[in-house]
Image (cartoon, rainbow, N blue to C red; front, side, top):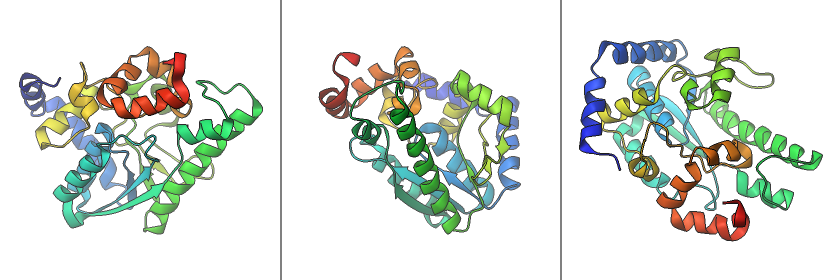
Length: 257
C-alpha cells in the first residue's frame, strides 16, 4: 500500500532541481508540438502526461481507446471523471471503442502468450492496425496532426530499445507523428508528479508494493503477457481486481495463471 511517508518523499523529490529540469524538458517538447493530441489510457504515465500538456498548452485534445468491460479496469471511469473535472473545459475528450486481448483470443479461438500460427500473427497485426487507426483517426478528426504517448524508457527493455532507435519524436510509416514527452522520465518522476499535483491514480498502484513498477495494462498477447507475468503483474491484477481476474480465469487462463 502507498504510505504517507512515500507520498512525502515524492513531494520532496518534486522540488529538486533534477526533477524540475526533467519536467521543463518535457514541457518544452510539448510546447513545440501544440497541435498534438494526448493518447490517454488512464494509467499513471498518461495521466501525468495529460496534466502536463494541459499546464503547458492551456487546452488539449485527449483520446482514449476504450476496451470492453472484459478488459477495461473497473476504476478507470472514476479516475477519468476526477481528472476531467479537475481540468474542466480545457480538455476536449474523445473515447473510441477498441478491441483488446479478449477479442484477440475470441478471434483466434484460444488463449496464447505468443502467436504460433500465421492466422494468430495476422490477428495481432490487425489488432494493432485497428487500434492505431481508431485513436489517430479520432485525433485527426478533432484537429490534431500528431499524437503524444506516455511511453517511458524505464518501463521495459523493449521500450528502451524503441526509444533508443526512434527517439522521442518520430513518424512511422502510414501514421501521424508520435511524440514521447515522458521518454526520459523515471518511475520516481511519474510518482512524484502525481504526488506534487494531487492527481488520482488507479487502485492497482495504491495497492502495489512498489507503485513505480506497477503496470496497469491488462495485457497478454497484445502487450507481452509472459514478460509481464514474470514481473509479478498478474498477481497484482488478481489482488486489485478479483472480479475482473475471475472472468479471465474462467474463460481463458486456467492453469496458465
